[in-house]
Image 1: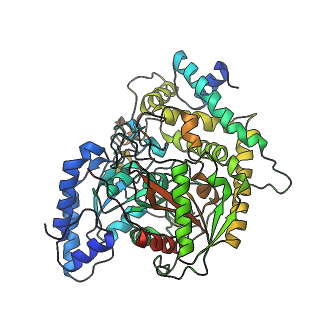
Image 2: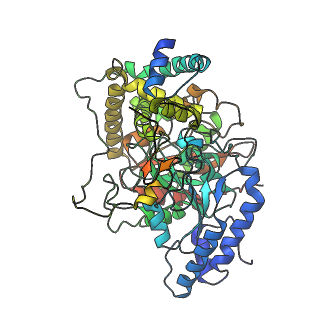
Image 3: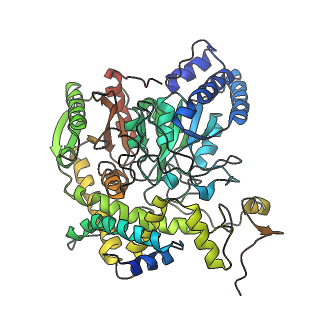
Length: 485
Length: 92
């Protein structure tokens, strides 16, 4: 197929479809061919929907031929496997849901289908989105396209790895404590966690309902805007979703940075952040200054409580949300258990992996009598304080710039089996979820081994457009290095 | 810190059956994890502390009867069923 580059942006692919440089079926087949050739090396996809994708591509082509294409018509996308797809199994990378086939589409899927986007398949992840390495999957760990001996980050590791490797044009992930942004940083792509309420969670398998958001992972901030435009907005099936009439996420692209103030919270640049990450993010800040922005050193004092607050709240909500897995209505069912109680306990013993069990137990600990005030209640008070601190910062700054993660990707096996080390590594990403704010990670450099480094822009609620514009300004001057597979 | 009995109680609350060896491993891991969670004890909440509810509803939809999912679809993922019912072990 001429004119096809697997590392093209969504916008470029859409232009290729419009100009008839290639057809939607040709484009879809080209991605399916790459998946067939490369997925075994990355394990990014759990399920590939080749036949259905080709049918969708043919429908997309009819729409293009009729001159009625939308931004994502005919664009091949991958979907994190915790987002329900009617008739296509949705496993959450868990034995518990290994054979679960949803009888309905998540709202985001219905909205992508309304544009005749092409859904290539379901992407690997940490089990139930609990993790930062994508190694806790029941279907085996995901590998980083920049170095297949290293983790891709998580929990949306398959979504990030697939985009970085050109196994889809863009993808959807979900972010509860950094699960879009951290893998995007590790895999050298752009990921956007929208404001809480910007995107419907209907059909997203629930982990921590007050923190979860679905969002895009793509090759550019502009592509993230295209996906977000397609899926965002009010949905009557999610009472927390917000009406966002006439939002144009590309509206500020190209804006002058002369009136933009970027805050650099000093707590995000301390010694726990590796020198190479700190240097790259500080250099990115200087680049924004060279484009006209004002840099301001600021403070988020309650960051020191953020990891504990996040894990207490998210685990408490997970303990509640995952109580539905009893082996009765859907999902894995143990073969043993004479009584109702035994059946449930055996089902959960065999169906959940060890990290999921730890989170459920931690959540029940935080909620149990005698500990509720000391842990859960205090954690939600910290959430209130962090929200106040962000609100104050964002009155004096247009956005906050931080590292996305304290380090670059690390070797598989190095730290995934140490829960405290894994939890502590989330320090740079959890506050955006705690505060419900939009946050975007985009590459800002590579270390000496060529591994990507990500920076994170966090903004005011429902002001994704500013983050996209700032990231776009940076990306325009940034020399991206593609993964060599 | 968690002892083995408390860990057993938490596993019971969590509806997860564990062997004694698994309980011991979990107790050891939870000790480390709870030490990290104890960071919240240093937080001075003060009089201005407040809890936020980010899941506050934007608007509730009208309370109207609407079609639900077809019964066969609802039952389609059950591993064990009898006629049009989910099947569970005998409870009485």
